[in-house]
Length: 521
Image (cartoon, rainbow, N blue to C red):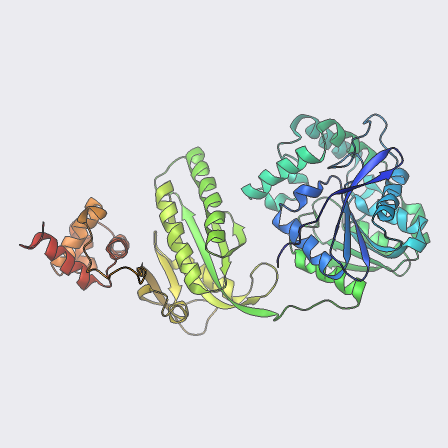
C-alpha cells in the first residue's frame, strides 16, 4: 500500500500554545488520533510500521494527527509547570476546531487514552465513538509503581536520546538496528531529557477512574495480551467500567500501537468504526520465502562477530528491499524475507551470499514457495518448511524446493539436483535443488560473442578446481585431492560457473582445456 504523505503541518492555537497537526485522507468521518507518551508528526512517516498504520486509518477516515503540547512539533512548555490532563484534553478540541471537525471518532493510544477518555466524557456531542489502545485509567496501578517510575526517570535524565527506553516499550525490537536507531531519533526529536522526565511525572498523576461511567460513546478497547508497558488488566477494568465497551485482546508483547501486527489493529478499528473492514484481495497469497542463516566459522570473538553480524543485518535489509522483497521476521541470526516471485528471492539470496563472504561470515539459505497469509508476518507450513530447508543448506549454499525451480523457469537461473529430504511437516520427502548460477543475458544491441572469460576472474583455489574438472574428476575426487569437504567443492563449482557464465561442468572443463592447450594463452 502506498503511504499517503501528509500535505502540510499546520498549527492550532490552544490558549497561548500552538499545537502542530496534520490531516490525511478524505474518508466519510473524522478520526482524531491522540498519541502516547511522546510523538513527532514528521518522524511517524519514517517508520514502516507507523506509516502503515496511518495509511490504513486514512483509507476509511479523514485522519487528524497532532503532537501534544510540549512534544514533537508543538510548542515547548515550562517543564516546571506542565499542563494538567484537562488542559491537554482541551488541545484535542482546539485541533478539531482548526481542522473543521465538529464531531469525530477519538483514538487514544497508551498515555493518549486518558486524554481521549476525558474528552469523550466532557464533550459527548463531539465524540462519535471511542477507541482506546493499551489504555488505562490509573498510572501507578497499571503502568508503573513509584519505584519503577523513578528508575525510568533516572534513566531518561541520563540516557535520553540514545534509544535506551526502547526496552521499556518494545523489547522485541531491541535487536532491530534500524528500528532502534529510529527510536533514538524519535526520543531526541520528540522531547528533551528534562521534558521527558517531567512528562513521566505528569503521567504518573493520571487517574480518570471517576469519569468512566459517564462515557456514552460506543467504545472499543484493544490490548496486547503480553503488553510490556501497560498491564492488560487495565483494559479489562475499562471494559467493566465503561458502559457497553467491547474488549479485543490480541497477541503481542511490544507496546506501541505501530509495532507488531499493525494490520490486525487497523482491521479491528475499521470494523468497529464502519461496521465492516475492506478485506484483502485474497486472504492467502502465493509467496516465496527466503530464510537466511549466518554463522561465525573463524572464531572471531564476541566483539568482532557482533560487529560483522550487525553489518550483515543492515546489508540484509538493504538488499531485500533492493530486490523487491519485504523484511518479514528475524530471530537472532535467522532472517526471513518475503518476495512476490521465486526468481527475486533467489537473486537476493545470491547477493546476500556474496555480501556475507565480503564481510567474512558464513551464510546458508533456503527458499520455498507456498501460500501465506496476505497480512501480517509469515507463519504456518510454508514458513516452517522454508526454515527447515535453510537448516539443511550447507555453508555458502542456496537450497530451494523443486517447486522454486519449476516456477523460475525462463528466468536465467540454473539449478542442480539437491536430493530429497524428509521433513517433519510433510508426508513425502521433499525434492530439493541447489542454485548453481545465473545466465546473464546481454542487451540485444550488442553482438553475441563466444565465451572468452579471463582465468584471472577465478581465485587460485577455483583455478585448481576447474583444472581437476577438466581431468574428469568428480566432486568427491576433487575434495579428496584438495583436502576439502565435498560441499565446499560444490560451492567452488557454482562460483566458477557463475563467474565464467558457463552452463555446465562440461563447459567449465572445455574452458580449462582451451586455457592450457595450444590455442590458449
